[in-house]
Amino acid sequence: MPSDAETIASYNSKMAEETEGRPLAADVIGPGVAALLSDSKKGRYWVAETDRKLVGQIMVTYEWSDWRNGTLWWIQSVYVHPDFRRRGVYSAMYRHVESLAKASVDACGLRLYVENGNKRAQQTYEALGMVDPNYKVMEAIFEHQKC
Image (cartoon, rainbow, N blue to C red; front, side):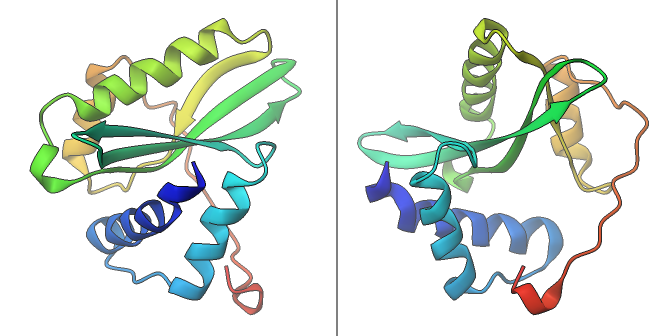
């Protein structure tokens, strides 16, 4: 929902700081969130609320897999407000996304990436049935693109 954009951007910034010690530029993350919210082809956010307060978020983007002739749903931008962690917020969001993916005619699975040192998150993902596929993520980020 566009009215959640500011909180989502804030939570993305907090997540990047917590997991990577990396600040995100407000003039990049804000428009990035707005762009996704206005174009469902880019992906989709789901949020968890308590008493009308956004307490968690999960984003999915889509990758076509020619090997599987289907779409992998990539879970990204996961954040749960510290006051609501270890209360099942992430599990509920994950199970919701998982049920939607299973009901989709072309979704063939869920993927996410997690920092190597984030053992707590890895344990959570494993408890939900995810496994380490033994891939290493590589990247080339184009800094001049403000990525």
